[in-house]
Image (cartoon, rainbow, N blue to C red; front, side, top):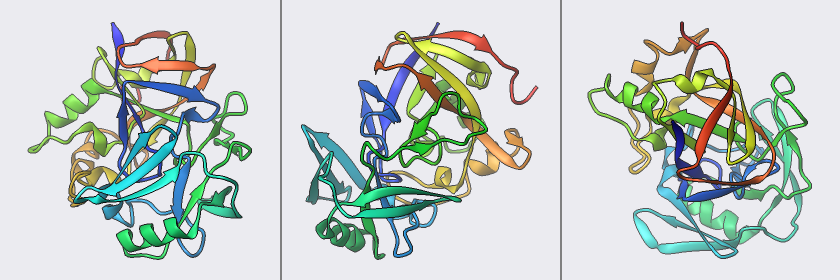
Length: 273
C-alpha cells in the first residue's frame, strides 16, 4: 500500500518550505507554491545555488498573509499579502527561458536585500501569467509557477532511507525540496510510477529530477558540504545527471492530504536496471 506521508510548499522560490497536512491543487501545482521569486539587478532568479543563506528565511502562512522571518532572528518579520495587488510587470530570467511577474513593492526589496546581502527584488506571478513546462514533456498545456520547471516533485521515503544507509551522516528530506513524499514503496520505486491517482486526481511522472548543489546545503544552518551528491553520483548517475525524485504533472483538481492512498495506474522501467 502506497500513501502520501508528507506534503510541502515553498511560497518564495529557494527559501525554506512549509509542511502541510493538506494541499490544494491549482492550475500550476499546489496553492501558494513558488508564486514568488527573488531576482537580481539583471532580472535573473536567485536561488540557494548562489546564496545558501536563502534557506535561513522561513515563510509562514496565516490567513491571507505571508510572513517571512529569519530563523536566527524570529523577531524581525516581513509581512505581505499572499496575492499582492497588481504591480509593475517585470521579466524573470529562469534558466534559458524568460517568464513574467509583477514587482511586489520597494519595502520588500529593501528587506530581502538587507537579509541576503545582495540587491534583489521580490516578484509575484499573477494568475494570468502562464509559464509552460518543457514542451517535450508536457501532456495537456501544463504550466508551472517559479519552480525549476514542473509543477510538482515526488520522492519516495524509502529512497531517502536507502541513501541515508550509505551516508556517514544522514540527511533529511528537506535537502531535496519535494512537494509529495510517498511511503510504502521500495527504494526508487517512484521511478516506475508512470501514471497514478491520489484522491481521484490523475498524476503523471514525466521526467526524473536532476539534482544540484542545493542538496548539499544544510537547510537549518545554511552550511554547505559535499554530501549527499558525492554518494548519489556513485549509483544514481544517468548520462551525467544525478537523479533523485520524479517531476510530476497532473490532470484534475482537488485536495491532497497526508495519509491519502496512491494507486499506480501504469508502470515504466526503472531508471537503473
